[in-house]
Image (cartoon, rainbow, N blue to C red; front, side, top):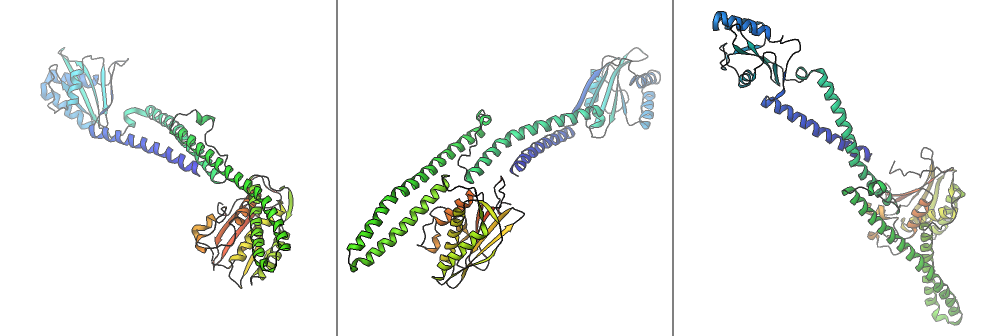
Length: 469
């Protein structure tokens, strides 16, 4: 869509500019009555266009004087739209008519009886030639004809076809120029979309654009520098998370062992403090495990993705386990529907992704309400959609697009429970299955999270989210 919009807009503006230029030229021709054709030629078969008028007009003038000439001119002009002027060698008009400057100039320029002078403007056509009268004196005959202000009679069909060919050539040139302008912008835009979609290797500068020395190439180079910097920062962050998480495992293991030894040696007075240390240690262990899981998925070191997974069975297990946990908090988890379907990937990874969303719903749904789970097959999209809805307060619309970001917590809730990693792991796990995630506030209150994964067999193309279809 971008290509056609941008390309057609550039292509259209070229034609608007061309049409404006042609319209301006036409108006100038009409306003100034400028000459479009001015030529002199010698007919090969003789001057048969003006000679009949010249012979008769000059004969009447020599034999009958100005009165005879005027009678001939008046009788001829009554039957023809043309106007005939006769000039003597001194430039005096002999018919008694008022001649325009163009007519007088053409009469003065006529010197060869065999040669004809033609000048065409938008409003009139003027034809002139010299003539020798019966008295052997030299005269000039000028015929002026008014014409309609259009181009076809002036140039003929041959010129019209030439103009059509010229327009075709101009159209091809505009096509090439528009393509040259649109292609680099499209290339940068597609690279930007890939980068925004998580492909950190996306680059805009290829071998062809690298040869350019214009602003488009500079834009592509700046984009590539930015993308490379972002890729480096993300990899450094991921490596840092991995290293920190990995390095903390050993101290925590030793801390757990020391805690066990402390319990055996300490008295009853230290029990509450040791219990608190144990809870914090378990929470820290869980956080580190989540960080390692997230780092493995992002780094491509997750579990094998070639297992056929029964989604209905996985969802049923998650619902059963989560309901047991929810009842302890005076909440419920129910499985509304579960269509039979399968996908290819990692069973453990998919189960973890679904559990994270369900547990998040348990924390936020109002006490005495339930978290409902629904598994439906979308035949048209060739995917299975797992919908999980709670009945809590929901989240602000501005926070919906950040729910799956690493360490993100909704500021307005002031929530202290949770690490901000569960939904991030869900998003990465579903993305590893070529799926999509979507969150929205449900009608009637609560948050609705949908997870889409492709069905077996997995298509080569990724599943498309309903938002982008």
